[in-house]
Length: 81
Image (cartoon, rainbow, N blue to C red; front, top):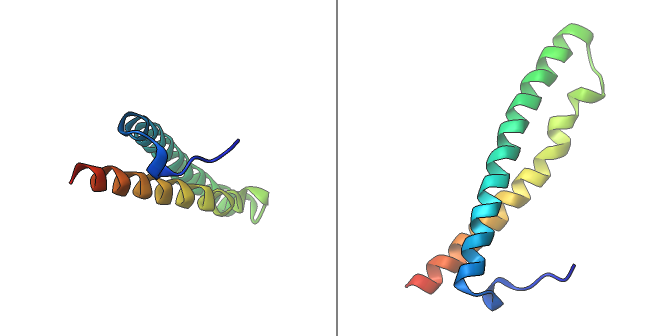
């Protein structure tokens, strides 16, 4: 899938992309919190397992989503001024 630069998207597409990314980031962040809590709980019960590493493995995906969301919001703000 070809990535289109944000500067080439129209305002409507940017707003749609922002809304989608905001919802995805919120859900992913919530799931990361639950996953981290479950990981700590399982760590106390069973010791170290593969589930102890999962929150750390998904953290870069969350960081990328938040970074992209900030870029989109900056582009929207630059067009509004």
